[in-house]
Amino acid sequence: MNNCHSNCSPKKGKDMIFLVAAVLLLGVLVGAAAHLTLPVVIPAATAIALWLLVFAVRERRREH
Image (cartoon, rainbow, N blue to C red; front, side, top):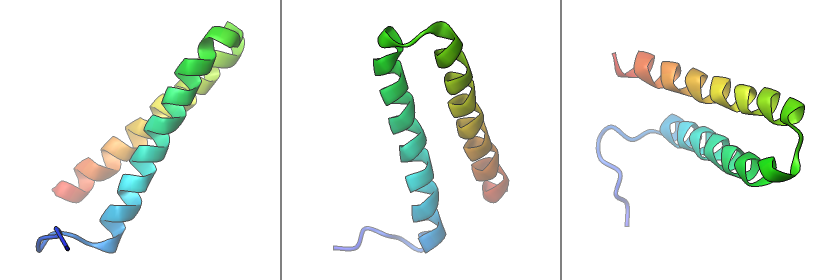
């Protein structure tokens, strides 16, 4: 069954994969943070936060 309404597009699916990958990577990093040193965790968390910020900006631009 297709739950896609008139605003669905293949590009939207790619964006969702982008978001899911970022959240999954963040979850893996948080789980591994107890075993990693702080100099490793901080840059990795910063990179993921930037990745999510880029996603948010792209989504906001597309809505307007």
